[in-house]
Image (cartoon, rainbow, N blue to C red; front, top):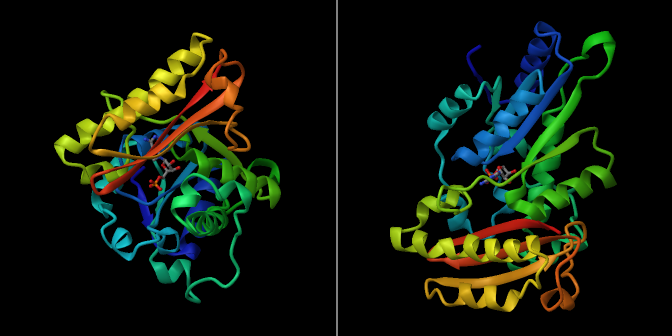
Length: 300
Ligand code: AMP
């Protein structure tokens, strides 16, 4: 079936209801994105299409989560190519509202406060970012509520897909949904990388060839730590940090191993003693004009 583009919440509900009834559908998946889609987004869409009767992808560049106006203005917008990619993945509906549709009363007065988990890491260098991101995710999760009853009059199962690439955002979304009882299952999707290891990101297109080459040190350093965890060795984070800092085009912001649930740094001693348990190695750095983030889950 050809993909359908809708731009209003009302049209989204009508079309979602129509498709669910037509297909006797028992489930709907939502994939929230900001567009400029790449293979990472395609993987989210593919997973949603596999697991649901109806799949909706939203494309909305949310002004509320951008600190600098220039970053918002220059965020890439590629709707035609995005629609082509999503159609190829079998997505049913694309919801691409304008700013007035999402914020009809201007900036929302009532917002999500993301709390302690948002104070560190990305939150520390991007003040207000997660409150803005969670506020729009809350709105998108509401816009995407399935528009009809499924088989036997039961509400369709509702899932939403988020990339592990944005680990802190994923953790915060999971907490918001649990803390505020949103009727949706959050499905994490592993990070998709280029062949050379660089995590795919819409912002990678702003890297020069030389900067892109330099940026590979992020995934290399993460892999080093991952290999040590797999081999039950001390993580020796200091040497991995030194590797990143040896690259002059890369300005490291943070590189830590944290508890995946609390995002608190794991005890210092996992630097010297063999790593055991679950962890998440997280890194952020500026490379040329772009701030890059990446992470790997550790399990040993
Ligand atoms: P964005 O359009 O950058 O806001 O991302 C939309 C969704 O795609 C988020 O849930 C991201 O975590 C996810 N995503 C972005 N890049 C990747 C990637 N390389 N692999 C997997 N998921 C990704």
